[in-house]
Length: 320
Image (cartoon, rainbow, N blue to C red):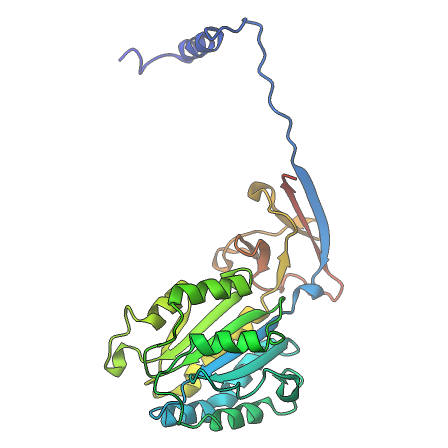
């Protein structure tokens, strides 16, 4: 009981005894190492924060059972594009279309001759025509991973270093590529430097279609890439494709500042008009968050800066 009730003086005395009983003179002084951290301070134009680039790749099953699903994509392609462009107007995007037949060339978007991007006069019509050309005479082995790897290696100019990669996979069968899920995920991570630059969507044969989805290769892939799953048996492809388009648009235009060094988080500040902007989730009143994987500051929105010539100052400390 005495140990538990030691007074502050007794604890201080005991601590002093421990320090002086290690062979040090009573006058020994401990020297705190110099702080070698460096301060970063830089202003960033708010207008320059809006923008991004997207490489969007559709892989649509063209086996014999996919006629109805292809028609659903064709009929609702305008909704996908409208929702996407509503958020990504003026952004730098491009779209490519592949089938699940590994030996087939891309159907659109992978060469300069058939580029489908933000400058195209009729992107909806061009995409619809390309999907219609898929047909249903593809391989009996439906593969998504192999065609993607083949196209990226044959057309390396399609994938841009500064763009996010969006994959939209549409199939009513299991994934049957020769490459393993883990190897394909590692390939994408290496290709884009980080998996955070890869966003995946699956319109697939989910459980409510009558077969089990859990534990399948597509399930494993979507889990590894934090992907989003939709049922290919959906009765409303308009809402489905609209949601995918909106998701891509929001991710594309997320205002951000990429940091040149890894900050000491306790020192990271974003200052606007001399005041520090609060960090944290938007629902808690935060205006920005720090993304560790991307080493960047992400803004929930830019409503705090109404003027055309506003700027924010980013300040933090780092170890050189």
